[in-house]
Amino acid sequence: MKSSFFARGASALALLLAAGVQARPVGYADGHMLMIDAAPDYQQVAYTYSPSFRWSMSAGHARIEAVEDAGGNVDVTFVRSARLLRRWNLPSAQGNAFVWGGAGRARYANPASALDNGVWHAGLQLDYETRRIYTAFVTEYFRGDQWSFRSDVASLGVAPYEHDMNRMATWIVLKAKRSSGMTMDETNAELALRFFTPTWWIDAGVDQDGRPAVNLMFNF
Amino acid sequence: MNRFVLTALLALAAAPAFANTLRMEVNGLVCAFCANGITKAFTAKPEVADVHVSLEDRLVAVALKPGQDLADAAVKKALEDAGYTVVSLERTDLTIEQIKAEVARGT
View 1 (spheres, helix red, strand yellow):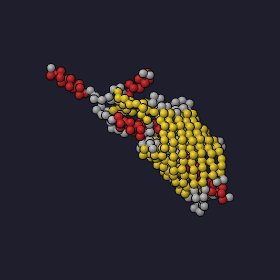
View 2 (cartoon, chains in turn green, brown):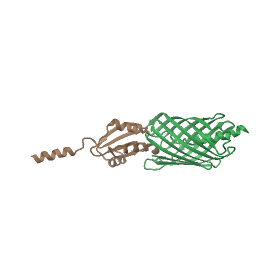
View 3 (spheres, chains in turn cyan, green):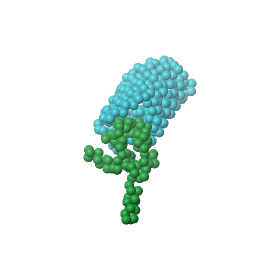
View 4 (cartoon, one colour):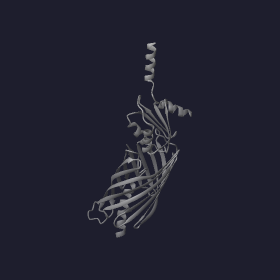
């Protein structure tokens, strides 16, 4: 009983922190990004500032609703810093290797909840894209005092046409996710439609169980 | 004779001392959301009148205001800070619209 109790809490925290990493964890020099995630059972707002194209810092707040045994909603405030390890700029393609680390602090609707209040995490992203194909692999590791959790996501995107600065991009993205840790070990798939222009980005997807999720980002 | 010399001097003074547009071939241009940093970086510079970024043509063109200039090194640094690699840089008297037309013709 206790392990599943912690697993649910760990999953909630990990989900919230993992959901904040979309597209590129580092933008361009002096770039600001506002990100909003929404799903039936969680919402998140995060702000990222990139002093240079090599690193960024983020802060955010997230809420997951009606977490069983946590007495209701769980609110997480987190900070994160990411670094671009290597970029490959090719004539018609780009590849990247990013790493990041962060920490979050959780508050529970039931103050007597025995779930961990703090969680640390670290991640790695490798991606390669052209204007027609997008591939990415993201692995993240989360750790609290009483649990650890790992998430691996492989993404493959295909664009039906080549976008440009004055033509909105359209992508069809398939994600395979594996989550493991505590009593949990599951794999699932998500299909998303992605649209973006130079200043905004939207991902709208649904997983194999029919759960929808939307991710919005704004560049400024 | 004096009028001729004066006219010649005025013509020389009016002629730009440098090409007015910087034209660059750039590697890594694949995502408009990410390349927004190029537009932002150049429009923030007081010397710049206009910026054109084309993913299709791997092209960045920067039009300078009359009488203004930007050093090659500063231009390359702005693109590198945006996360891209400059393959070549040339100065031209063509306007951005003329460059677009030239690229469209495939010349």
